Image 1 (cartoon, protein in one colour):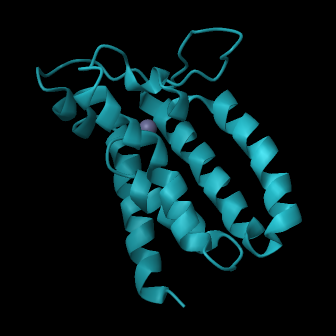
Image 2 (cartoon, helix red, strand yellow):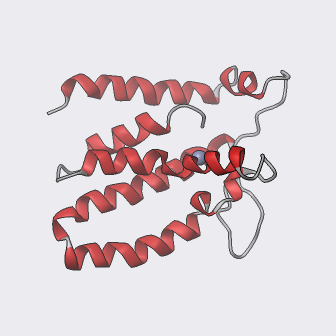
Length: 154
Ligand SMILES: [Zn+2]
């Protein structure tokens, strides 16, 4: 997924039960894994697929959620709905990346990537390959859904 993580977090936040900070938590969770692009470009000089970084590994976030959610429930119950929206948006990000990207769903048991659709390299520019493939229609649909929900915000 190239462009629709932000609106997907927004849609999830809008559909999540209303509570303090749910929407910003969902939007942040929807985009947070791709902050690894900073490290990917500026530190690692694109040496590794950025989906190998811990922020794109489902098992990492599962461990964080298993630790964080009970703590939030115990000490900051008011924000439990926001915390759950945050982790749901993270999961949504990883699911959306799995459609045409690669995610390490089986880590730590395997280092094999999983993806659902292989986008053929028809053009020299990888962005064109994505934008001209039918999976990009899903991104446009997510943007359209977010645009539909935005004017109806409470
Ligand atoms: Zn991603």
